[in-house]
Each structure stands twice: as C-alpha cells, then as structure tokens.
Image 1 (tube, rainbow over the protein chains, first blue to last red):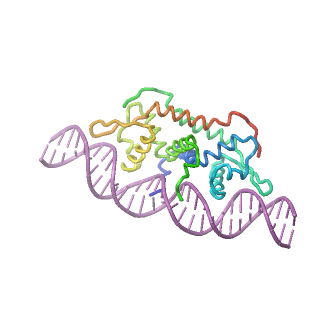
Image 2 (cartoon, rainbow over the protein chains, first blue to last red):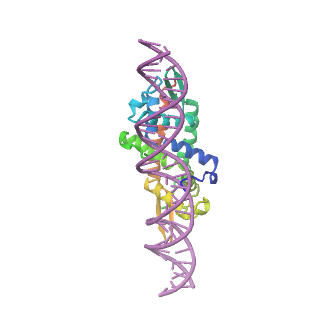
Image 3 (cartoon, each protein chain N blue to C red):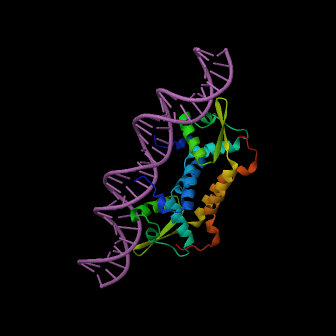
Length: 110
Length: 110
DNA sequence: TATATTAATCGTAATATTGCAATGAACAAA
DNA sequence: TTTGTTCATTGCAATATTACGATTAATATA
C-alpha cells in the first residue's frame, strides 16, 4: 500500500534503511560530495552547482539535515551548510557493518 | 514530478543512489541479513522469516536480483537465493568510497 | 522606509513504491 | 492425469517521493 511496514523490522534494520534511503537519490549524493569537496562551507550555490530548482535543493537539504548528516548555519541572508562529522562517522559505522557482514564465511551455494 | 532527474548527475552518482535505494527498505535489509546469516541457501522460507506476503517478498527479491546483489537457483519447485559475492564486493567498494570520503580533512566550519 | 537577496514553506502535479489478492507457470508426487 | 507445492506475475489501491511555481520570512542594503 505504498507504506513500509517498519514495525515488522528491528530498529537496527529500520535505521540502516533510513540512512540508505537518504542516499538513494543522486541529488543528495551530489550535495554531500560537494559539501565534502569544498573546504569552505557551501551555502546556496549548491543550487547553481547542481541543476535543480531552489525549492528542490532546499527540500533535499532538509532531509539530510533531518537525519543529522548535515548542519546549517544562518549567515546573513544565506545559509551555510556542512557535514555533521560526528553523525556522519556514527552513520558510517552502522552502514559499514552492514556492508561488511560477508567477511565471516565464504561458501557460495548457488 | 516524482521522477529523479538522473541525466543531470554522473554515472557514479547515479550508481551510488541505485545501490542505496535498494537498501532503503527494511524488508530488503532483512532479506540480505538473513541470506548472510544462513550458511545454506534460503529459498522461500524468507516469507515465513519475514512477515510479508509471498508476492511482496518475491518483488523485493526481484529488485535485489536486478541489481545483481543476489542470485537465484531453481531447485524443483522452490528457488534457492543467495548473495552474489563478487557483485556484493564490487558494490561495497563503491559504497565504502562514498562513505569514507571524509577522511581527507577535518575542519568543521559551522 | 523601500528594495533586493536568500532560502524556507506551501500547494500541487507527475511519477514511484509498497503491499497483497488473484492468477498463472513449473514441477513433483500420488 | 490429477493434485499439491512453490514461486512469479498481474492488477490495483494506498501512500511516498520528486520537482517546481508561487509565496513567505528574514535579513541586508540603498
């Protein structure tokens, strides 16, 4: 019904899915890569960098902020965004554990 | 418009997003974890393990298979699924690089 | 104060995703 | 051949996501 039955799964599984979901759009991947690349904080020129309209970028930034992966600082009329490093590291731990779960055994069966 | 403008982004960004998207649902996270945990190949008892209906599980398996992360083998009336290890490793390289891009510098700006 | 700039929010249209009942296809066993 | 088992596919309803024009809010500047 278009609604993920998240109550059927563990908190851990839902957390992995939530992080993955936010990376599941190339615009958000692009925003994060840009925030990592630029060593000074990027503000609204993400709109110019990426080709999407301002409300669209703003919406993507909101989702990234909601998950805690970025933080925004108001500077005059513009807003400066950057990676929230502590939260990024915490996310990375969770996602890496999920990606690396195959290291325990190595028997292929089909 | 509900449609990701993937032509605006690089192949690499789209690839990351595609992998992430498939992990963006707890049912698929759960299926993958189960396939990793069970050292013999699990077939249709994924339906019993996870609480979703058979067509729903089948649909999730299809998406995982489409991305190459799992493979299925017909064994009589049942189908045996397991992780596609080579493709999983390749995916892991791409995703890990994305997750680890913060290691280069460490200045927080906002 | 009036005007410009920047970014968030609202409203809405188009499309995608999720879930399942019903059905179908393939095979095994009686 | 008939029956049962297992899984894929179809069709559809409910909900979510994406994108953007229009507007609003906040601040800076003339």
